[in-house]
Amino acid sequence: MEQLIKLVKTYRLSSGLAERLRLVEAIFHLIAPDLRAFVFSAIVPQAAEDVSQEVLISITNSLKTFKGNSKEEFWEWCYMIARRRIYDYLHKKKKDRLQPMPHDELLDLVDASAQVAPMMAADRHDLEYALNLLDSSKPECRDYLWNHYVIGFDYGEIAEEQNLNYDNVRMKIGRCLDEARSLVS
Amino acid sequence: MLGRSPIARFLTMPNKHTDAEAALKKLGDHLRLGWAKKHPVSDKSLESVKNTVREQWEKEQVAERPSKPAPAPAKNKSRKPSEPDMER
Image (cartoon, rainbow over all chains, first blue to last red; front, side, top):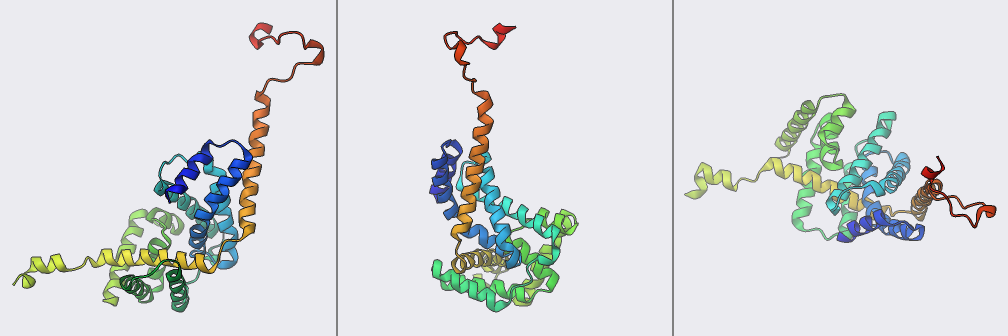
């Protein structure tokens, strides 16, 4: 994946259209699958296609202004843009927040992931544990755990969306995690 | 007797809080991977990203144009263009 940051750095310096198109295509193939999946884990499928396209276009538009030097910084920057677009969308259409995905559908996706990356027995055990944590949580807690840990929204973003303060959200999520753990163990 | 001491129990006890957090994050990674496998990216999506690059590039070309020196009119071809300050 070091290739990714090399492509981004080269893109920043490139001026010719043909070179930019070649580079953006290579970057696209490296980032699009993860970012689309990220959006689809947060929004109803009917809207997720459009929002994920907006995310990719926003990233492309700002690629020349990206200041980082590592692939980690680049991914962080991409996910920040993606979260911001998801947040903007949900703010406008709260009803389009993804309803909890049924356990079987989640398992189906987990199985599909095993076709891409081999899964050890310990991984499967961890994933079943995570699914049990979600299944045993009350709806409000499930939302918090899903948004923070599974999707990756930070405390500040959840606080902003819910009109709560940062510490309040941090404590709620901590309590939800403790409660789920105690129910599963 | 090490196994019975409270310290030993603490040392061997997994940090459940961290384990739960790590398991949920791992679930997120696998769901994204599974999703990407089941719903591959379309060519249309790539094409609209490329169109964005084309539009941005064209805007840059337009923005750069005024800064380039205008070609001298044909009748003044032989004259050396004067510096803006010298015209004052």
